Length: 130
Image (cartoon, rainbow, N blue to C red; front, side, top):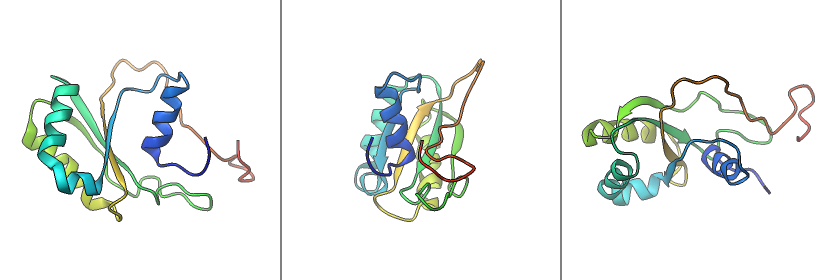
């Protein structure tokens, strides 16, 4: 993996490497503004009858010199069968982002979690790359 990626791009890369990352659908703010109805329909079809997490994936969220973790909105427990709730959740995440190239990604909520983790790209003590 070369260069800094967004949170969604990093999670997709980890999934491709075989890590147990939940399925996702990601799209840019620009795409949302152009095709919101098609995006809502796609997500409803891809993740039928479940609760969703609508998450931010800003290009400025995690960088080589700073972290913006927690600075952007995520909306949890959004019913995939409720198009208006999904649209509101995506809009709430969108307005927290700053750039049209920033991304929003949607994943099913997971339950019965036994273990979870945080992916770090830098060592906490000295900032060296992993």
